Length: 184
Image 1 (cartoon, rainbow, N blue to C red):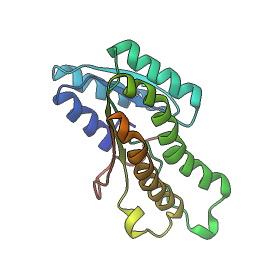
Image 2 (cartoon, rainbow, N blue to C red; image 1 turned 180 degrees about the horizontal axis):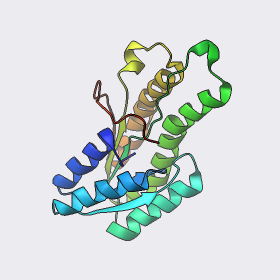
Image 3 (tube, rainbow, N blue to C red; image 1 turned 135 degrees about the horizontal axis):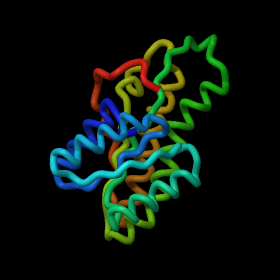
Image 4 (cartoon, one colour; image 1 turned 90 degrees about the vertical axis):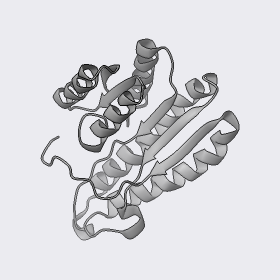
């Protein structure tokens, strides 16, 4: 989720701090290319990869592309999320599963694929981008609220499990973010 909005800001900030960044997007190629160009024009290192993070094979290919491009992996930022609004009584199971899959399955698959590389590097960081609605709720967003609350639980579990490897796992809840609406 590095193509636009908070993902773009995170990618740019990491690059400004000296990190080489693999910008991933599921389908927003033009926005992801713009993010990479912004980083490179500021003197940073970045590359683009398109992958659906709910697909284990696509995640493996994304991680292999990052290692191939930059030589190692030290950090994972799980930012991808789908935020739709649907009243609970009108919500269909496939929509529920799609939202949870993108946030939770995506974070699971990415963390699992990155783990051997972070261990090999001698440690690293996983940062999960949470949501304020996980803590306060929101009407019409039961699926999003549940997914972000689950991400908090995953963060706590992985923080304890990965600590012996020198890997920190944190969940950052940035609050309300202005976003570009209407983009795929």
